[in-house]
Length: 282
Image (cartoon, rainbow, N blue to C red):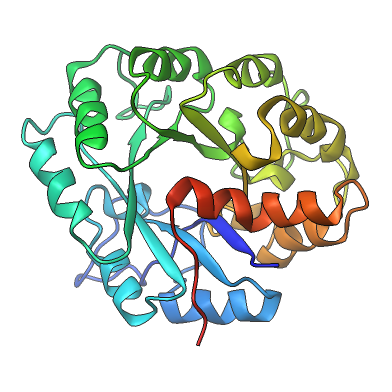
């Protein structure tokens, strides 16, 4: 089967050449070449490279460089600025960028990412996404109601929901009730203009590797959304302090809770369908 990681963040070291906006608890560097080497070691054919907002804000130039160096291995997604009145031009230019398959918005309760669901900037982005035929990746963990309202407000826009729409820890351990928002996530499945990333799931486990306690709630997600609307991913390197790359991959390859056809759809087929992109190794 073809394996596609629906969310990775590659980046250079923090230098004056390309300084970070924030310094998160990530490895000091995870370059495109290093990410490809890690993917090769784990048998991952390709990945959706989300330009890291924490580090680079709305500048996706490093993602473009990496995609150019590894065109068969990465498709790229750029965060776009709701406060930019010319965001339609930004999205139009991004659509013309080789390897570009989507844009991203943040709708969380964190400072700088919190805004009303009916913010006119979000409306501009949603309209531009339809016009230029790109899906909108939406991070709304910890703020599912607002994310749902945006999705409902724009039924013609294709949305790809990041990280199960469930707030995930940046350091261990997982919170006492990591799946508290699961009922909202299951209800959200009724929106036919949305698919969901099953990314970072292992960070929600309260048990040691291989994290057996994730499978009962995940099965509810898979059943509600359907396997063709669920995109497996690791969220490497954001998950670094909680699980390593191998630990985010192997449980899905080895579990007996997925049939072969389910595994193939979850770990690649659904992602290829949602982004209209498939990797080409070699």
